[in-house]
Length: 282
Ligand SMILES: Cc1cc2nc3c(=O)[nH]c(=O)nc-3n(C[C@H](O)[C@H](O)[C@H](O)COP(=O)(O)OP(=O)(O)OC[C@H]3O[C@@H](n4cnc5c(N)ncnc54)[C@H](O)[C@@H]3O)c2cc1C
Image (tube, rainbow, N blue to C red; front, side, top):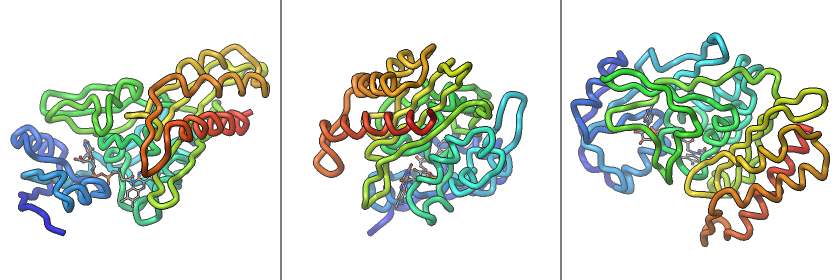
């Protein structure tokens, strides 16, 4: 395998990284390299400059904020899966991170890299949708907050603008919600053939608020709004779970392919996965 030549910088301050990104439009930021480096080796990505974020201190760390947790973009998957604060306040994120690839991938890959890459079969997009997280994006022009529901717009396409990078992910406190991530992994790659993240608030035996994030089945991860609406205000009975699971596959065009799964099979797995996730939280 070959790699075309590229310039390489390794800033230690966020301001310098943002300045580099603004100055070199053909640059790409490098996080864990788990998706970008394979693309470069195959020459499917040929950036003229890599801005390595590995030493930018401001992108590290998991901190408690007023209404939840702020997770630095360079937080690696294994840390998400093991952190006590995330386990307590955002367990759906921890569960999804524990499902990513294998130990090597989890020790290199980052939450910022995974969300920015927006692979249609990645795990964390479903979790941040169910958690109603907000993506903190920065450029030399300033910082803006992008709700997860608006972030994923197509296969490998996000709402990030040129010159912007993810700085952190803000996850509202989920402590009182019931959460579960259900995944059918591809046996070879580990990526989600289907992944369903559920976060429900219950009050007096009824669903007060439902959020369902789906990955693996469409061009990008999405919220299953019709299934959410059916659940809200109702008791989580077997009949209700069956009704919601029947609706979920109508929310987006379910894609089929010759490598992973046909559309029909994915549709079936999606319904089964949502049903299992809801049974778990019930
Ligand atoms: C063998 C293997 C198996 C895998 N299995 C799974 C799996 O089961 N589930 C799953 O979800 N993922 C899986 N992955 C992907 C893994 O989760 C990667 O970590 C992730 O997709 C990319 O994260 P990264 O930190 O490595 O980003 P990189 O590869 O460094 O970057 C990916 C892209 O995001 C951009 N980027 C990175 N950080 C930022 C930022 N802060 N702001 C803006 N843009 C940024 C880069 O410029 C690049 O375009 C697998 C990868 C491998 C190699």
